[in-house]
Length: 141
Image (cartoon, rainbow, N blue to C red; front, side, top):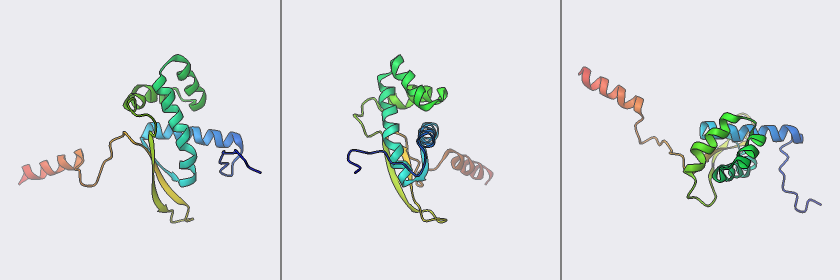
């Protein structure tokens, strides 16, 4: 029986799964949003939130624990200096999963995993590049 056995195995060995989830969290820290399968997103979410909790503690022991798990000092620095202070007022729920639908090749359910506090670029807001191009066209006329 699988009572109280929560680990999602994702069809990988323990070492492979730990390395993959660590890399997923590092990619989330670096890019602020990752596109992955729904199962991987659900497995990555608790680990990312634990890393933010360590970042909010901010002491040396927490930093060393984050480095031990993530294995990338640059990502730990970004986590502790930008992401954790942005989530300081929040009591949990630092990430969200946005479902995208099936992947075309194999119909695997896809999802975005992103930070809740990160600014979301919408299609209605013009980006800086588009406004620069619009100004150039207006000045040419």
